[in-house]
Length: 250
Image (cartoon, rainbow, N blue to C red):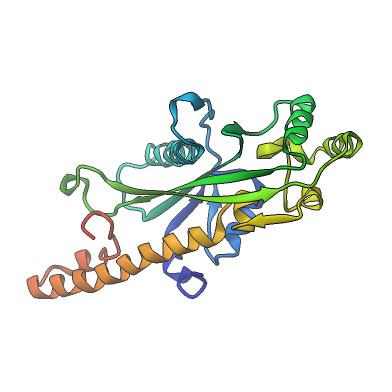
């Protein structure tokens, strides 16, 4: 939970690199104030080149976040803005095969038939990219990124063809990995999960808060060290105002 610390990001430009309403809905629960800038990354990576679905989802999340981060950076002359860009990608894995969003109703039906009566894994990769307010001349890399992933196992009840057809006809499966939404009608098919519910829905809320909380602890520790250093060296007040730029030296 970061609700008690979210205000520290009030002066930051927090950006969600996703247009999926459910991700924005979940991110609001953290207390963060953010804006949405959808990524233009085409998600066309070759799955066969990845050793695991975890690596695949993580790389997709990284590409999405980097796409938005770079597009915003191009509009600026420097990195004066403290910014955090959040990219995320969710996939369903059954028997080692990655199931993403269905291409059409036929593929949605096929996916749901394969999931019927079986247990599968949902994996979400998340990447956080932070800009730095330090002078670019002092840093070879003016940003820092963190990527992590969460996995949850999901058990489906046995579904009849008529149940699958009726569900696909609602349109709910068409923008969801694995062709179902646990937070919607698809939740009626699921008797059991092992792990994070929000991860299955598209964003591992607890894991995100855990990782961000760890980073914020580094931030607070860095601020103390930076202030002490500034006082010892009697650095100008203008530099002291920038002591929140943590990630390059922390």
